[in-house]
Image 1: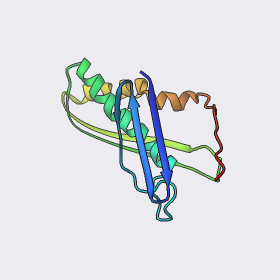
Image 2 (image 1 turned 120 degrees about the vertical axis):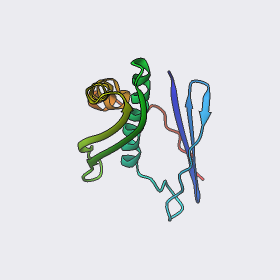
Image 3 (image 1 turned 30 degrees about the horizontal axis):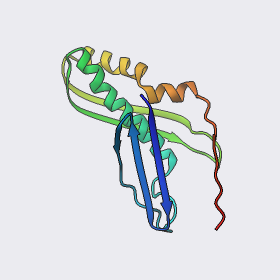
Image 4 (image 1 turned 90 degrees about the horizontal axis):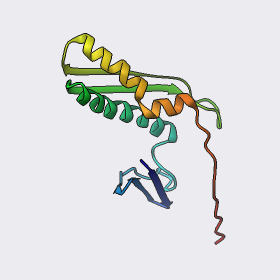
Length: 138
C-alpha cells in the first residue's frame, strides 16, 4: 500500500491531500492565526495518527475473530521538549466496548497493539530522509 500526503500553504490557505493507492481525499485544517502554517502542530498529528491507526486496526482485527465492537476511545499522550528533540514518554490508553467477554476484548486489544503499523513504525524508528528540495526565489 503506497501512501502520499501533500500540503500546500500560502497566506490564509492550508490545503491537505491524502492518497492511499488510487483513493484520494482531503481533510480540513485551518491556517494559524498569523495566516501561515497549520493551526495543528506535527506532534498533535503524530499522536492523532497513532490513535487513528489503533482504532482502525481494532475494527480490522475484530472482524477476523467475529467480535462486534460498538465503541472505541483512544487517547495518546506524550511530551516534546526543545526544538529538534524527539517525543518522549509517549503512551496511549484505549477503551473498547464490544459484544464479547472481557478476556476476549483484552486479548484483541493487546494483539492489535502488536500489529498497529504506526505504533510499530515509531517503535522501530525508521530512517527518514529529505530526498529532494526545490528553492524558488521570488
